[in-house]
Image (cartoon, rainbow, N blue to C red; front, side):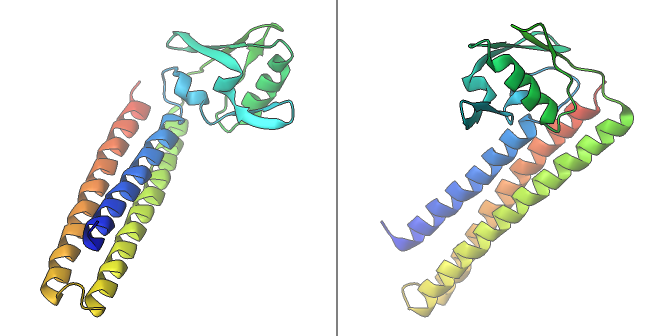
Length: 187
């Protein structure tokens, strides 16, 4: 594979991964509606190792204001309740010993604004990661130019193409952010 093609492919892949990571982090932020993805960030102590909640229980959303968790093993109920309470989601799980119900209280306006700030911070971190990928790609192109593998004109053209990929990735992130903010602020 041509070294320039490799740089472009690697750049696009890394930027796409940054966007995917941001989307999965944003999915764990609570909005007014119940969603199983809300619990994706929760890890449970399963016989000495920390595993994602969805690997030890069935998670369902019977209505927009309730999440139910049915552990596959009865001794896991207490561990799951403890993990949910320890998370920063602000949820209060109710357990009958076999089954866990997690009612979602309505978000206050103040809490909604805090969540929007959290979203913006997460997205800003992803944008920084994308810009770092751009910088690394440009450094690799500069090395190719210095070693005379590409001309100065090619370097400037490729540099511009890397910037276009970066702009496209940041625009995609902004769209994801806008949707999440709208979802949070909706009543």
